[in-house]
Amino acid sequence: MNDSVMISVNELKKFFGDIKAVDGISFEVKKGEVFGLLGPNGAGKTTTIKLLLGLLEPNQGDIHVMGLNPETEEVQIKSRIGYVSEEPLIFKSLTPKDLFNFIASIRGLDGDEATKRAQDYLESLGALEYYEQLVATLSHGNKQKIQIISAILHDPDLLIMDEPLSGLDAKSVKVVKEIIDIHIENGGAVLFSTHIMEIAEDLCDRIAIMNKGKLVGIGTMDELRQQANTLGANLEDVFLRLTEQDVSVNEIVKKLRNSFNERN
Amino acid sequence: MSKKDLGLYKLAKYTNFEIVLESQVLSSGANQAKLLEKLKKNKGSIKQQAIAMKIAFAVMLLFIVGLPISAYNEVKIALSNPSITPEAILIPGSIIFGAYFIMQLIYLTMLGMFAISAMMSGETFRWYETLPISKEKLRKLGFMTVFHNMDIGLIIMILAFPIAMFIMSQNIILTLVAALISLINVIFSFSVLVLIAGSISRVL
Image 1 (cartoon, helix red, strand yellow):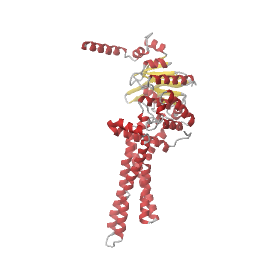
Image 2 (spheres, chains in turn blue, yellow):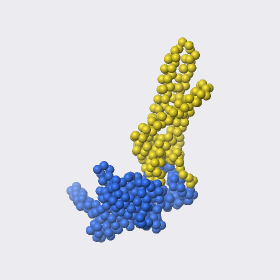
Image 3 (cartoon, rainbow over the protein chains, first blue to last red):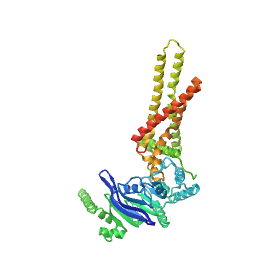
Image 4 (spheres, rainbow over the protein chains, first blue to last red):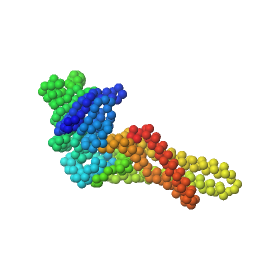
């Protein structure tokens, strides 16, 4: 396998009974790129991420993460990736200080260096004041900041981020984007799942659009526009066209306007 | 910060804290804001409560040692009375000793269910699953969390009976027999608890 390929997914399938959560998708994520995974709710994005992390076993198809098999080499994979979920999964009964201590121990990091790095990140995200407060008592946004720092503390080769910016204020969003840029400049890769089109358009080098478990479009913004036959359109239009939601959305908007006009 | 590999027992300590927090949040109902305010004021309260809970479990398990002690006393008194037949001594004595072991099993299962019910959703382990820990180790961690939650209680269960017997009888052989019986009973009771937990929890 090519060394520059960080994630390789080939004809991947995952079924839950009759539900085809992931239905024969193939894509690659290369070093130095932010790869976006877009799709409506229930499209299969989170299932794909869980398969990459080795949390689920596929029914069919091949997955390689940094050349490793998530089914048999999940520990090696997890030691080289950072994962940020939509909901902060980190332990809430600890303070950020204890949490970062714990992460440093579990990932075998140098203690002082990890502390320094964690404090630097906390400062840049405006959360240093919460260093010794229980995570459970923090707001969703601040918990998310702690989770992001927890995922990058060991300087991973690959970042897998599932809606990482949810609940963050504008300044923190800017800082996280900067962190992603630095990560990419240093030869890392990012798999980025989001619902927010502007963020995907702004951050991602290539985007894959999922719908009902299948990939309905993949490529750069220009390539996606070509695939959707929507030259000059923004990602939202391309997304709606490729996920076949453009007609239904137009109908809903029309109905909503009619109803509003009738009332007034 | 230390650069060392965390053992299962140490990892279980963190899961135990999460279980205590989760159970508190769930039981607080509409008073979650008050609970969070309390936690904000005293960030050590989760650790304190985890320890307090262990001690409470241990005290509860200690109380039932009163059963075999009273049985031993009764038998001793009865033996000194020649008008009482051996059957009249053995049958109630056996029943009381049997009741003690059954009560140990019931108590352990009931108290262990606290940790197991909090673990049932698997929420506590979701973050662990994303860290470089093998699936095998995670499975053992579920078991170790139950153990961590009750370790003081289990030690009390093992030691209380033989110590009580030694104080009462001053007989080493009787003490050793009591220790062996106690150990076997604790292993059996804990295995039953793990089997019950395994069938209802996705973690174990």
